[in-house]
Image 1: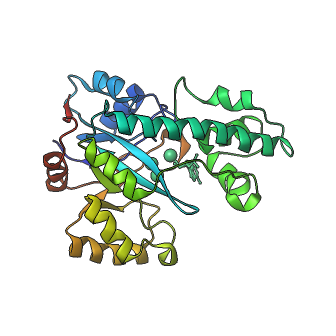
Image 2: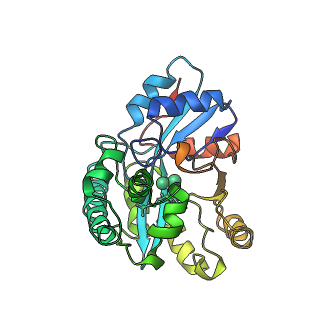
Length: 283
Ligand code: AMP
Ligand code: FE
Ligand code: FE
Ligand code: ZN
């Protein structure tokens, strides 16, 4: 497993703007040695990513970013090296993806009261079989001239404060961690300090997640806030959690650049050693 190592990226199989093939090409162009493909709630991009990486020297860590929820707050769980055929995990991700679809339709009907936007506009933005999310609605709004870019669409229209937001189904993190572990995967909490310390996962709750099998915290991520990271670093040490870093690259959909945060080789080795669902793909 070569460095630099970027353990969190998205392709057009969810809300990234590049196909898995284009993403792999971009990773090589950026000089990465290892990349994890972690599309939201799906493993559908893995095979294309492997095929594109074959013979290039790039290592691909197959993964997924699983949607979970605590009350109103959405919590993302990175799941590395899961068995893609695990039935329980497949059933749960299918349920999430289906509810994401009907939820997106509901958001669009709310938007249609104030904007020139239809469900067809959104479907135009979604690749075949991809996990649908608000970024695709943002892209449709941009295409209709209602916003400058994705970030503006999120800030000015899609943020819950504007009233168009509808949540989607997601399991609680404890159950999600169990599902990932049962599928042989290694769960790492994605960008856990984005919301400020009032909304930080409480120590007792984190302890429960660790007991259920949580393996690490993604502390090097551009959206994490330093005060939260400082607290979580202490917990990571106390509970023996690994600390990862990554870009959360979405192609042109976000300013995040490949390799802007990275993970140490020794940490990735621990993740791979811990996993039993799938092997890394050595391209
Ligand atoms: P959803 O899961 O459908 O509610 O949409 C959340 C997704 O939107 C996240 O995974 C991010 O990738 C993306 N997102 C959130 N905020 C922004 C933003 N300000 N600009 C671009 N993408 C965003
Ligand atoms: Fe995303
Ligand atoms: Fe995320
Ligand atoms: Zn992500």
